[in-house]
Image: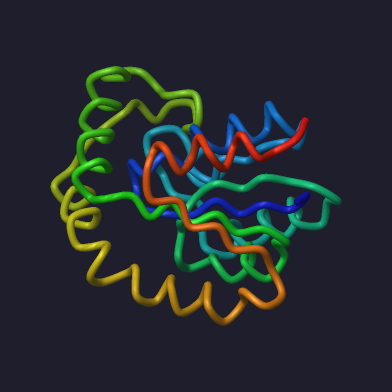
Length: 169
């Protein structure tokens, strides 16, 4: 486990898990939110996103956390381990609101500087519909690459703790 892609909906715990994995393994973590936004919430182009990710995956080891479906193939193809945070939407929504309150008017650690925490109806709607609209495609992609890669699906805080306890320093 040296090239790890952590995926899942907003609020699922991707960044937290990635930080904890990095601490346990010593592998550098890259948060796509911090790489794909410029100050003022200006998104970088899809081409630049691919270029950034191609630079990261050329390294021997990495942890990349983020969903970004338009560039998901870059990470899934290069990863030896894929962790899918498949937690209930109520948990995701709670964490999004909690994160908003915690970082209101500030930039959270896994986000690009100059992008203060925000919440939008579109984000909440996307998370609410994720299980029905996005998850089936993700599960199919994970099934298709599960013979070549380790695929870990985490559905709860307890599952995350169990997964982390199995990782040796």
